[in-house]
Length: 392
Image 1 (cartoon, rainbow, N blue to C red):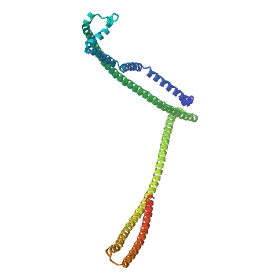
Image 2 (image 1 turned 180 degrees about the horizontal axis):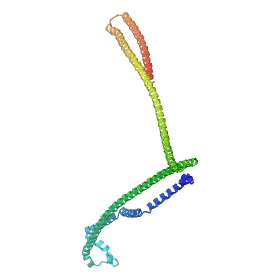
Image 3 (image 1 turned 135 degrees about the vertical axis):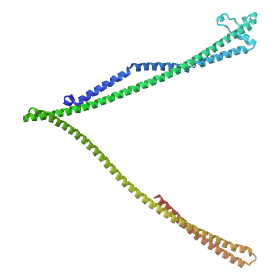
Image 4 (image 1 turned 180 degrees about the vertical axis):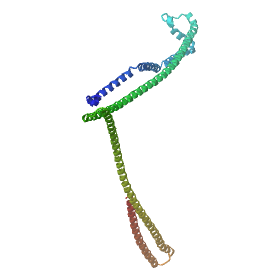
């Protein structure tokens, strides 16, 4: 009300609201941290973690392995004493002493002869002691094993309890988050209600101002009695209509803004569609030009292929003529070999004709070779041009 009346500035009002919200947030946070269930859960979780750490350290120290190694050593010693020879047994028994007889043990050279007769009895007695010790160690190992199993089961139970506590903590955290979200929604609803309340106060103030204006106008006109009541009712109705009209004006103003925004979006979409159509048209023209170039390239390739076939046929014909010339050039040699009894004049004539044929063959071959080279060069140039056209 102070804000609507103009007594309290909007900045001070926002600062006060922000300070109150921060204070409420701190109170909720402190309440969550000092909640007894949360504190008990944290303490229980710390205790379970300490117990689990102690059990892990116990397993890491390897108590069971140490006990098993000691039992194995004792068994080896017992096996050594039971399986050794009588002489070694005597020497070992002479060296062994009981805890109560350590101070009264005698050296080996001072042992009397009658004592050697009792060595077997002492050996049996010591064997029974070792067996008793072994049974004790075995029972101790079994007890340790049982204790280990119980500890392991207790650790599993503690682990399960820890999982349950974690689940409870997560559920509690989710519940607190839901509560905070609900509180935030309540604050939002409160802000909306406060805004609506301010709007209603503004509307009510406008109605009262309209009524006061009508009353003042009626007072200036000198209206009294029942007419004043009618004027008051009419003034209230006029003020309500003014407020309703103001609401409609705001509504249509917002609707006009929305329609203008939609119109701008539609214009941008139409412009983008026009640009897209232009690009599509350019792409179609480029595709048509590429197709024309491809058709020209195919036509050029077909022409070059036909030229190659013509050149190939011409080459085959020239090769056949060359072979014929070669066969004709070999005929004078065969005739010369067959006519060995002819005079020297005929031989010289044949040689001259052979030389003339050789000269003709060489001239024809040189002309054919030059023509073939020119054709090959032309074909290479045509192929290079076709490749360049295809690349373009």
